[in-house]
Length: 267
Image (cartoon, rainbow, N blue to C red; front, side):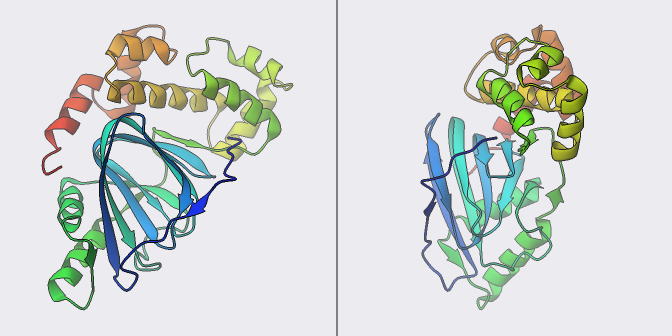
């Protein structure tokens, strides 16, 4: 929402002549990577744990079967939920021509996961080496953007919408009705629904629903029990949360994180 990035720094990368450079780093729960940017396009992936990636256009909660693509020079910050094994690839600008400029979510197939983990065994990759070129080409072929995902919140610019969003962000479990929230922001529910639809591509109710789901996923990644995560995120009961989780992500929270754990390997 009203993000402050006064201290955004440029983070230079080594191996400037390489087509792809890599970063392998493990972070403890709660660790925050402050606002920064690179002069290369970046694929941010956690082979273990859950990350929250923030840019000026949106916030993503990124589990182990998703990654976030961040174009060169886009400021971003990352917060870890649970212990995180981050595996990052940095590409020379315009190398990945199929992905949009800016930021997007990339689906991490089992093949792409293994390719990323393999690439991260080397500090850099160069096109002039045939086997490395082949690896780069395979990775690029697997990078497929997903336009909108359930664990994504677009940021807002309208002052009234920002006031409502800030209230909910400060406490995702806030139980006030949408009408009450809108009144405190100085606008009618109808007006704010229209603003959210225009700026976020979803209604205020849907925005709040996604915020609650994102909060619950973060809490689960930090080790919270399902009931605690559900109630803290604003659901009336654990069963209501499980039902929404299944509807949105296609499985239960327990199976979701169990599957993520079974795919870890090589981290």
